[in-house]
Image (cartoon, rainbow, N blue to C red):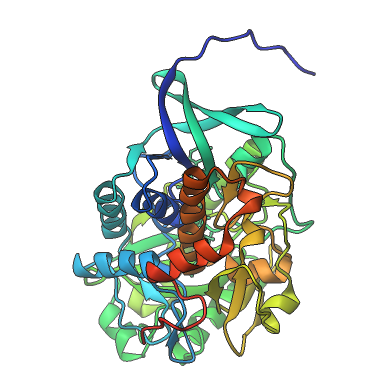
Length: 440
Ligand SMILES: Cc1cc2nc3c(=O)[nH]c(=O)nc-3n(C[C@H](O)[C@H](O)[C@H](O)COP(=O)(O)OP(=O)(O)OC[C@H]3O[C@@H](n4cnc5c(N)ncnc54)[C@H](O)[C@@H]3O)c2cc1C
């Protein structure tokens, strides 16, 4: 059943060269890159802060800047980590290049970087639609407390994570038959972090190979088999930035977050389970005997929904046997990491070396003035299992924002990008493309 909405006269609030929708890791860096390359840039974000999954969902290890001792992601993403580090909210000494962050500091560091780069921020505004003529997007429409408001733009960067803009503009996006599960991440206080530290738990941001990790996992598995413990993954426990606090990735549930009714049920169910699980932690592990919930994510963490149908699809073979793409714009190296929605398992493939990421996976097929970055890019199930991590999302963000600024300056369609100029600009601004400019 359908109803027809009345035609509306929507005010146009302002006009920008580049409009980035979604202020997660990809969108933050895309907006910074566009602005630093001369574009008048607007970043639209539904929450009152940036960071996406890193802050709203408390996903606090940012993976992964190093491979085999080489820094494979640098430039603006690394600058953001250094800024967070200087504010005391990121530990960038971890050799794995898998950096723990303090979500509150990350919000501030990213916001400052955006504002200092000249980006205009629009918080509390939900991207709600766009105006398109012959595939060319002229405006995005946001819904906020002022009502429905339009912003005119020349190039649009979709960093919503769910391809909201791409789909609204009429371009194709698809979902895997089986989506990775969602996780309500939480932080605890009152934990005996000294005892956990003595057992080596915090030696690296994610360390599930230690006896202490096995002890916790085995006990939780036993309880899960008896029906006393909800479905879980890991658990991956990282040290909080305040004494006695930890950040835990554990609860998981199968869902499709692109259906709000279904995702609401997931939120309700996981919130209920969270309190049960914390009780279980108190009862079963002496280090957690006095723990309390410090906070949980503003939202349950979403690993994936829609992927665009791009000019190119990154495949498992491309990441396992790296290809020298002519349009390489970034590198990645994180393990292929596919969480199972219906069991405590995880499919992991460790990559021997870093791989190349081509520009074409960010551009919707047949599109004109739109590009994406982050977890919505065009990749098969396995390739997505590695490009989805935040350092890689940020590196793609730098490429997308830079490309958007170049497209505005040279009046280019995103599909006809000046790749040599894009690559040169990225390298001049610190991005690692071919290791000419690699810092160790
Ligand atoms: C449980 C879990 C564990 C993970 N573990 C790790 C890990 O250990 N290391 C790692 O590096 N990565 C990890 N990831 C992956 C990583 O967090 C995400 O893939 C990454 O954050 C994606 O970045 P993004 O910018 O593409 O999207 P997101 O982080 O999802 O950001 C999207 C942004 O867009 C905004 N937005 C969405 N729709 C709209 C709209 N219509 N209007 C306005 N704003 C909108 C959102 O509020 C958000 O700020 C994990 C993810 C989850 C869920």
